Length: 423
Image (cartoon, rainbow, N blue to C red; front, side):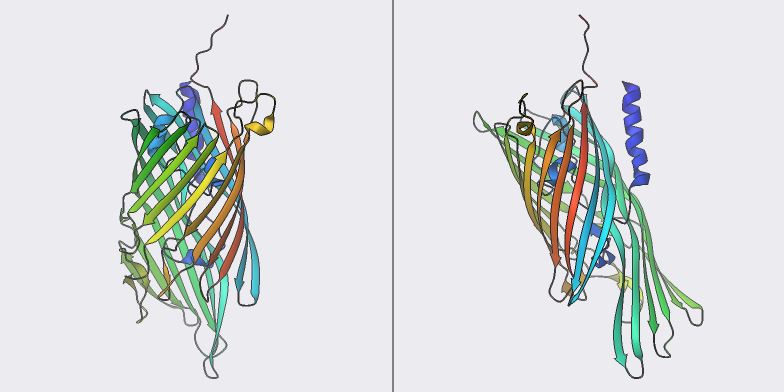
């Protein structure tokens, strides 16, 4: 058993090297630390990523570490997820399509002691990936300026967490993570006139800790109904990293280098959710989160052309999501469709960055999915989670994005710790 647990931990840890850092083609990923990733697992993506108040014994819910204390004492859980997406970009009368695929997360969870559960794994944090050109006509003297923009990279987190049931209704938990990644951006300017061609290369490498605490309060309100309140706090702090900008005159070969210390920080994040469970058939949940980016400075090019720390580039953001999960009869032996989980969700989010002094694009999303039980010789506790999500991202006089995303996740839930008897 110890060998199985060790192998599972090693497999998930090694998945860090397989996580792609180009799961987007969005030009909006050039701002801040990139596009914030969906950190939920497959079972909640059909509900649009809710899970702060989700408390079940057969899943590893990393959105709230307090949920780990609910994990079944007889099982070992592994959860792996991948996604693929098609995005349509529209600006004026121009439309462009792009495709992406990502191996997103790998997590495991188990009961360590009575009332104490643990989890570990790798999760995404941000994604950067774009390539486009912007052309501006100056005048007859300066001609046409073409800026080619490219960027790649992103941040991921490897973590370990624990959840403890302090009292029957109250559980608390904590996730301790290590955040790492590189972000590279390049802007190459060329002209049809005598103006020299210029290139600006922005790069940063991040490696620092990430800390999150959570609680859940579960209350039986009737024979068939249970309410669960969940809340988490993500600790904001400076990442103690360096950001570099190299400005090159491609024509005459001269370079200028700007280095900014203590360039990026994580914000304080406050989140809360409420879930209603009816007869273990219908689960309805709503989540809200606030990220306090607005109080943070980040590097940017000022009016004088220098690369320095600036305020006003980031802003506070919030996200509201709601979803439901319905299973007609999870214990039906004759009707397979009655054991399937049917899920719906919707969400709304505001951006955490400004673009040229104006608020970035807002995000509207809807989702639907299924949780399909997988049968084997021993049990049908493992589940294939399939979901689809449509995301509309837009702002006035900016690029509009419509993304169709397909998520596939598989939860292996096996009774490793059951004691077998031979008659």
